[in-house]
Image (cartoon, rainbow, N blue to C red; front, side, top):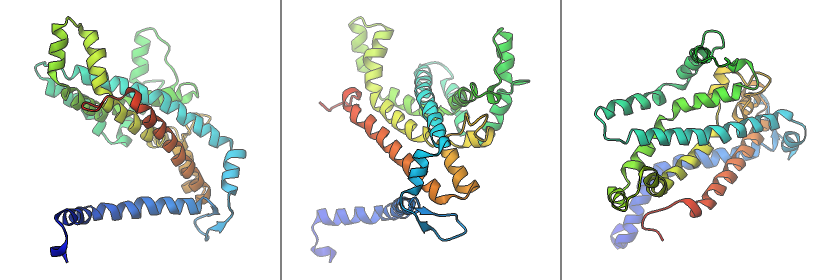
Length: 298
């Protein structure tokens, strides 16, 4: 049959065959999972008994009579609002520094990237020591400067800033992406700007930032998606405390699913999370035409 197909159709068929494993995996592990979550969210499913259809009761309970739902949501929004911009700014500035032509730069790049490959459980245990209010490294440093030493994970005020501060530890991957973007900027642009008398800040704000907007856009979208799924740090270090101050949405969802075995209720939470992430992502994508510059596109 292939001999009677045109070259274009044969190429298309070959492409589909090569993409088939990924398509099957996507349908089984993504599409099927989403459809299953939608079904379970409309049931009373306690794991050890068959699911019982209850309609929208889980959603009514979620929005009307569950204060922890709103608490976990506000904690997550707080974390995303501060950790994502802070992480992008620090990663961008580090990439700018590591893009300089200095002897031994490969060693510096390796040093700054290494923390991001440390398993998150190990880094969480390390930060528990760094932020310990009695003998932690950070509080000892603050005391040397004459600054107050917060009770990081013992205070509802300082617990979320502690986790936000810790999130900077894992920016190595984002930094590498920014570094690749910086090295892709044509040097002729900087040379032409220097001939026109542009200074360091003018080149940074008028060339570097605009040319890096596609990378910034990508990092922002991925940061939002990852930020709303923050779980491991709070699960290991605080278990959502103190006073539910670090009860992030994903942790509360996990508690309902695997601690209280309320699978139907947790499924409704998962679907709400999917909708929130989708709305925020589409919002960012819809604004990208105004501030993201793509070379070669008018």
